Image (cartoon, rainbow, N blue to C red; front, side, top):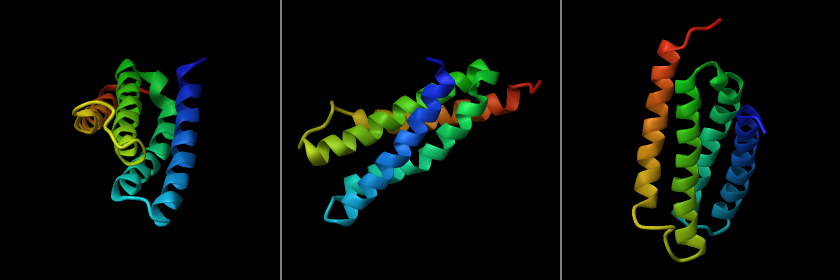
Amino acid sequence: MKFDRVLFAAGALFGAAGVALSAAASHGGSTNVMTAANFLLFHAPALIALSLVAAQSRILHIGTAILLLAVLLFAGDLLARDYLGQRLFPFAAPMGGTGMMLGWLMLAIGGLVTRRG
């Protein structure tokens, strides 16, 4: 399956999960659930948009992959704490947060150096 289709589907799934988790948080969920929902919702449209352009550049492609994995790691750790009562692994959320920053920075660089044809 092509990476652009995976990104588009991931963005759509992030959106659906973000809405569902927002509803769960409004009905007694914790701050962790709301934070995870927000990060999923913030990144859903970005992933859908990036699915249209990431193939133009290796830097954009890598930055998008890092962003996708980092959001999963960050939100997954917050949700594991709430629903499973334990972390995914030590420092999972900080690694996810750092990964998101790295992904966004790579996208910024990719946007500056990618030639549009």
